[in-house]
Image 1 (tube, rainbow, N blue to C red):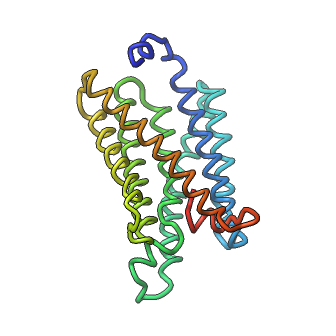
Image 2 (image 1 turned 90 degrees about the vertical axis):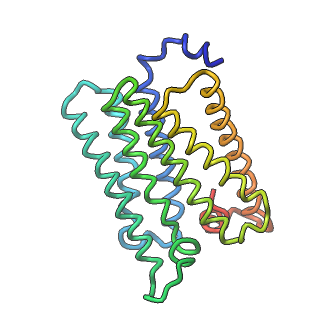
Length: 243
């Protein structure tokens, strides 16, 4: 299968496909933030990511349509760097919001309060988009694999903090930690090493495993959030078992 994919001439379409995927990511992240921040009636600075999300989608789509236009390119780069700032500042604001007193516990700061990993998604997607547009060839491949590995690492940390609330009582809550860690190592290995066909198959298998784990985990979380309810309660979707 991998050999067949290699024979396909998709080189001219790689950048549009990857940038299109980033536009979808910005859109879905914006929807997630819209639902989460609506629980607080968009208190103070919570409207900033809602403004940025559609702006980022438009910037990516404009870059897709007018790749050779210098003004569009610079605007795209500026918007993406704004996304990095929005992600970092949002993470700090979540931490500050969780730290309601000087004696606040680490559990409150990192686990039961506002999710500190959620805002940084904007920064990650923006960095990924910048790398897609700026680099080509093996250099881009390496950098995108590094960013993907960092994304898996962030997901592992988020899963650890989320499942830590239950004390890992159920053994299956460890599955995404193990699969995510393997995916992180696989991405870093492929980014910095010269992989042969056998190693490439192993890495792809690990990524496919994570796809399955993610879909099954989504089903478990959704079922848990809907249990005992007559309608969708968005607060449960965001905070009880985050999708």
